[in-house]
Length: 322
Ligand code: UT7
Image 1 (cartoon, rainbow, N blue to C red):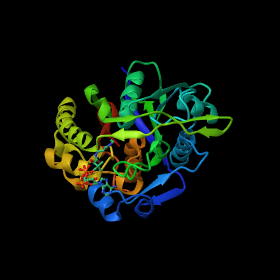
Image 2: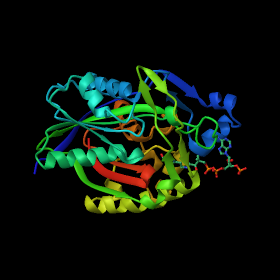
Image 3: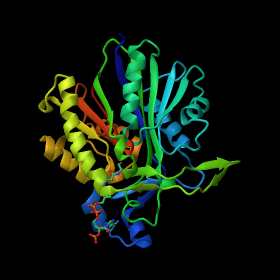
Image 4: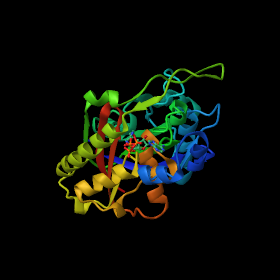
């Protein structure tokens, strides 16, 4: 069975930075409420005509710039998103075409905020099964396109962005045992009512937006993630004390704090992306990991627990050694 190694990472966000003050100007809210209830200070939004595939391409370009590698021998592209430019072609096919990866298969994954972690699980499995050797896993979203800007309970939360990692067959594998799961009965607590599309370059505004029962999702996330972390650690024969960094999905700083309280993990060892980028769903984990690595916090040999959770309600986790 071939081992899989996460070898490189890149990210991208749109140029437009949106501070909390923007929401003070359009809805009944305050910077103080947003920061104290969510931790979020800023997020980035795409401009008209800028799409998820654009962010995917930029994240992969950043990956190649930071960790020079050829894209020619990439043999599979997995893109996790709930905000594709359009339902067909897939984002993975668009990225395959735009970055000239003619040898690569292409597949999108729909597991919302757990999608990037699911992508790593799938990539590891494809490599272990001997089917593929060099896989790009991308988490990318343009959530601002499916945000109801009149709903103050949700519109302040979401941001746009993308993160990409390369996973390669390598005898020195660094991706540990994984867990996946879902509480499908909670699907109606968090969903998108429609989707965006384009025809001849013109964006069609369909009746689409994220609808959520924030309190229910909050409670589910804390209970489920805290319990499943124990299973993940057990599967890897590790204790919490042996984990250097925890990268949960960055939905809300208070959710992360509650998970840490519940499990006894220190917030000092958390890598998050919610404060500066908002909740970027599929992109939140790679963006947090990228910034942890770029800032020098994450050292070679560190053990990092990734745990995605969200719409579905779905979750997936694994432990990598950087
Ligand atoms: O990626 C996964 C996707 N989603 C999530 O993970 C969301 C999980 N849930 C959450 O993050 C939180 O539940 C929210 C941030 C959505 C809400 O925070 P909360 O502390 O659970 O607030 P709440 O819904 O209990 O509302 C408390 C109060 C309410 O007012 P009343 O009824 O007490 O008078 C809301 O109307 O805060 C009010 N409120 C706001 N006030 C100012 C809700 N949104 C806002 C707002 N500004 N933007």
